[in-house]
Image (cartoon, rainbow over all chains, first blue to last red; front, top):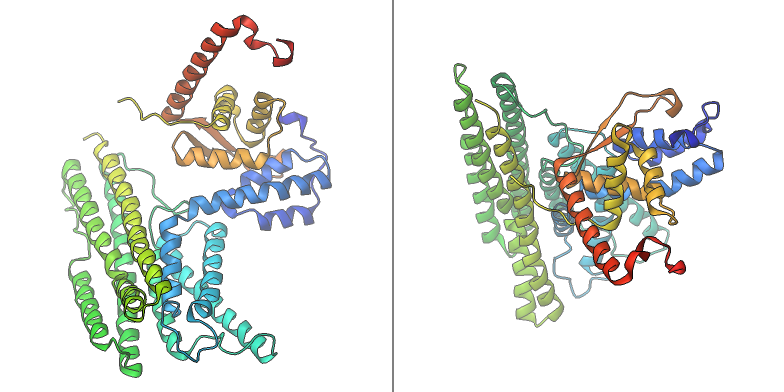
Length: 359
Length: 120
């Protein structure tokens, strides 16, 4: 069967092979390029078959590396932090939703492309690189819009205001946290434990992961506390008391993570059942903390949607804002619940995997 | 414990059958060739086979691994596939359903079911 396609003497032109290599995501590259090489008959056949394969492979990678809740939370965070839900001033030439929508969509497209074409990496590294990618795309899009405005190709009012830049910085830690969601395809994972030694080394890897995530979350909280504090002091928004209470709440969460966010150590003389019990209990406890953290991260966004869409829609009789609020509030809740459900399912699978190790 | 049943689409059934019949030699090129053979006269895109294999791996119906690189593939590895228990169970269930359909049709049409529709 395979021999029908094979001609060992013939090989695809190097340039063509390199072009396809760039287009095929790294996770599928080795096998797909090998298959195409094996089926090689002529440069035209190789190019046309390669081009037809790329959309399937890219779509499949996008499905495997992203999920609806993750993409939903990313677009919510970007759009909100770029001021998309802010009420429009009467003299504003461009609506805030449009001003924020374009860079938010470009950044989201960048994040999806990055997830498709990334090499296997640790969750912490992925989170940081996601935030950096989004920041670069937003800055580049603003530079491009400024250039178009200077050239007179588009009207004024399309660039983000300085106050939005401060808010935009707050999106970075949240994007970083979303990027660290475990269990995505392409993550570096240890093989399942089968003995006491492998269980302990697996637990140590889990502990390191929790430590890194804890540090990332505490760093993100610190950035949010400093950024929000600066925003509240510098711009004195109408929601100042609400803002202060949020910042205080985040300080409390930061203290909780610093004191209780870490894992317990397994004693060096522990038996396999005792070590397994500690591991399983810690998995469940960490899952409870992280599930709660997902809600904490988005409390300001819930409040923003409530005040800027729902309440403003009711008080000003703005039906569009009212309907947008009624749609986006439950949608945000749905994304968080869906993400927590995926996490809980992964934890339950891990607990069951540990339970299956013979004592 | 009996694995939870998975409803398979027709294309998934064909891909699983291809993997089953190829045994140790089930990888992208051979699976595609076998799927085309089973789907005759329909042509099948190689990419469609890849995305179905990915989806079935996510459903834990199949498992894949990379073999060592070979010269005839430009020094690239093959991604081999094998059925998982859930995949075998799902294929078995699909085959039983197909058998019941065949039996029901045969009862109505007699033995003409295995002949092309134009010759009946």
